[in-house]
Length: 202
Image (tube, rainbow, N blue to C red; front, top):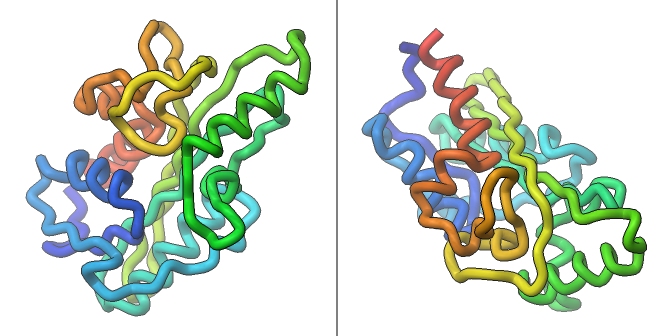
């Protein structure tokens, strides 16, 4: 198995995302340090794709910390909105002062879907790009997806972000209602993480 290192910076200030990544990495005995704990800034996400942003965040964290860094860029892509909010998923939750409210973001998404008309449907998918960067410039990136439909009103208080309005294909409860372990087994982040682990094991 390829070795990442004993300590890994998780390049996110999102506590929900940090918790989820830590849980996914727990079986591998890797000491995970969050970006806030490492004193790292939150970079401006200027990429036009999830991969662009994940690699930007991973490279900056590795450069500044001197440690391997894992960064995730993820979001909700809605068919009726031609892939929006997509890479701007977090920005849809921001107010004029930059504070995030995903309750407002979910309402904004749902209103836009309703405006698109009945024929547009409610199909959506989550995307996750996971980038692993080292201080010497090496980088590996993996992309995962999970497909489903949107529901309204939002359901459940598990998960974070848009989870309460997303029902994965083959299930009748939202990610917001799902036990975290069940979500971890099927999520977009789990899909990307499985590809990372397969690469490490190759």
